[in-house]
Length: 602
Image (cartoon, rainbow, N blue to C red; front, side, top):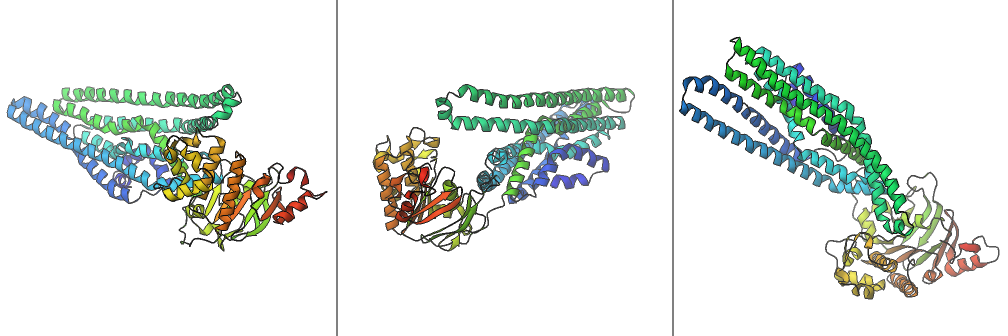
């Protein structure tokens, strides 16, 4: 904003030239500033005025070189005074040293501005990306959010913003050349206008291609990440060649765009550098002509050439960093869209630890990105000390119910209440503390076993970690690992068997003694001993006054359940005491007997 105000105080032709060079980048950044959370913040209001002030002094000191040339050629060489030459050279060194200090200080300030801005937005963008990923899986804006934030930070830490701040001085230096001779001044303005036109041309011919190339590169990277994450499936099914071919097609599209972008942008950059060299030589040639006509001194000729180089330097810097600026602009746009789609989380009034009273009233859930309801009008009530088994065929809605109960998928209305409060009244992390969740696919993170059980807490409670592992019958397995609870795990729990992953995931759900447990297919990958441990853990939770919702197709898992809910195509077809429901299902002619009972497909 400071540079914009400074530009508007110049004559009209100066405003036009400056706006052309800066508008392509700054226009989108300013528009995106209106997005929630992307405002510059207090750090920008403190740092930018200092950067601008240092820039004013630095650019004024740039006049030292041309003034030195004038004095040497027009005074020292004429008077042949060595003391004068020494004094002028000393002043020159001092001025250039001060200019170097100011330039270094400006760069350091911009690096810190980018780092502080990024630190301020990290949590907001991280939370928005997670929320968007759950609402629209595969959304590029959510997947690339952190990369986009880094792209803007790299732009702020680069010389490009300082070059943008220095653009108004291009016209100032060109105007100073008028003091030497009008011909030289007009040549300088014409040269500046040419470079600005090249900058505008660069924007026009590369903007759309840069966006398409970035999208293609993002798609290729997403596919590569997915292939690496599913490396076991790719290897086991002999898909390496096919997976590579598919990735290579996506990568090839991105490479083709990068080549075309380099050809277009690189050609314009070379043209601008060539034009600058020609302009500087033309300045010397025209200056020599003016000197031959007796209208100017030789010192002014050299000083004019030096001033022209200083005048055109910011424009050339902007062109050199155009690709970085485009990536920052595109990243800023995506971030603005993401934060606009996911408003900041409203503050939640702290609620006390809830009782294990879970009420579901006419629950309807529509999965993100789908127009079809996964659950329709499902109702039940769980009191403290009760366990509910949810059974049904594949696609019946069991996992959808688990995601709704844990707040991952929003209900169509406030249909789920925990101790009388809707799930929306709890902060997401707080809700996760009160509802222990074991997803159907257990995901562990880079860190120790203890950190994973403690849900990545920076300082895990050792007693609670061991207690949770013991309740999940995982303690003996964990202490048999090379470093026990301190054994480092790779992403996804690489190196652990399916049963080990399942037990650690169950221990993580039990960590902290949450009032409610939601267990989605907890017996998957468990042997008979593990299934018995699960039943014991459910009974312990009930005895402690907790409530358990257990999605399963394994008959043994229902042993500790008091109630059973039968789902079919998203609807509840039976609900009641376990034995009553199971007897009804085994009755001849019952709709859910064949393959849909506790031993059927899930």
